[in-house]
Length: 233
Image (cartoon, rainbow, N blue to C red; front, side, top):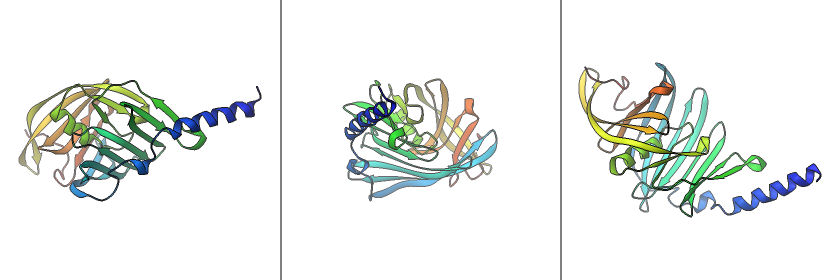
């Protein structure tokens, strides 16, 4: 078969698959609402600041929306995560170095990466309950923190890798953080996201920061921890 026919058939097939996905404007909770939380996460790798991310958490029509915009290691990005009132994700989209999105279709996550003829659709066989994690954004980790507080047996969908991995662990451990020489009581949730250890530090419903030791990555909420994520003592 001639090459142009192969390309045309592939493009038409991909277009049919994409038509099965609801458009972003069909996802509820994308605009308006009441802001619940917000702030700026500072991102540090191997002790060096590599970016900042402004995030906000909104409640609208019985849904949650988490928005993030920022720069990380010289590259800008923006992300949007929509969840139901039980913190189950409905939609995630991120634009930056590349475009990626994921939503639940018939109970399974479906990842769309790229754009135009270079778009790739990957239907994952993972089972709920899900959490969607950003390719570069850490704002969606707020939802991971809230989810591990209330349930176990989670599956993390990694849109940037077009993969799904189990989330294991998550029992809270009391810790004390150092804020300008003053103690701040907090809770530490240590989980394994696939093969990665992730440490989430929070107070109540608020995610204060996190660590991914294997990647040398640390992030912290500047408004609460202006001096960084430090344990007291």
